[in-house]
Every structure is written in structure tokens, then in C-alpha cells.
Image (tube, rainbow, N blue to C red; front, side, top):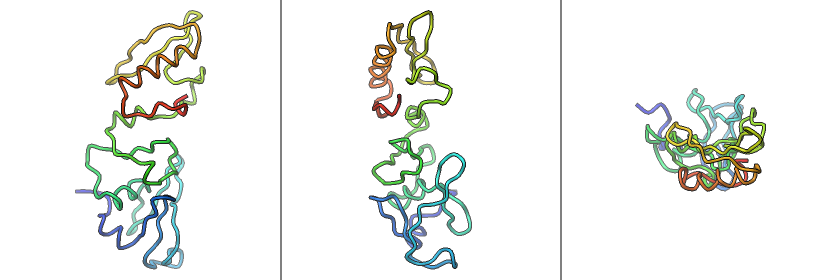
Length: 169
């Protein structure tokens, strides 16, 4: 059983603007939810917008995917390509596996080097990447930038579906 509303139900309730990433209500369901109202959702503590549909809360990006493309296959996730959880334009969303979703994460708050996959060890910069839940050592380098370039080169090989822009820094 799919826990999300159907595409048909969402099309009855909303019109989606893929360029802006918002819904417009097609019917009035209460004094705070009137026809023509533009809706972006309510942010949760993790920065994901939610939207109430038929009395239940759903992640906004999932509703965007369903209204635009139909049901989400059970084994797949919706990824925000630019890592901005409130950017729900259709061009920023893609269907990925859990592993691919893990490859497209922001820099951890505990990171002290300023680069993903890079740590300081023995007066050198160590570069590593995760592949199938295992850490692959890429080498030791004299500079952070060299170590990060090794990480980016490995990312192209091991994580080909993941963006390698400076946002992973």
C-alpha cells in the first residue's frame, strides 16, 4: 500500500508550478486553505517543507514528484540535487537509490578541514571515499587541495550519478 496520496488526488487539489516549486490550491478546504492560494509548505526542524493533504502531513518534495511523475517506486528516494531541502523545483529533484542519495550530502558540521573526504594525518592530508559502505583510501597528499582533487576524481568513478561541484566542499 502506498502511504502517499495518488497523482489523481493531488491533481484534484493542486496545480504545480515546476519553475517555482510551489502548489496552487484548486479548491477551498477551509478558511486558511482557499482556492488560488500558493503553497510552499511548512518547514520541519530538518529544513524539509511539509504539506497537509486530506488531514495528513507529507514531505513536499514527494508530493511534487507524485503530481509530476506518478507514484514513487518503493526502493527509490527523491534527492534534492543542489542539497537545498526547500528548493522543490522539478529540475532540482531526481529519483535515486538510497546509496546514490547518500553520495549527495552536504559537508558535515563536524568536518574540520572544509573538504568532504579529507582528514589530517601525520602532517599529511588523507583522502578517502565511501564505496558500498566501505572506506577506500585514496592516498596521502601534501596539500588539502591535492587530496580533495583525488577525492573528486574518485567520486567521478565511484559516484557517477552524484554532482561533483564545490557544494560538496
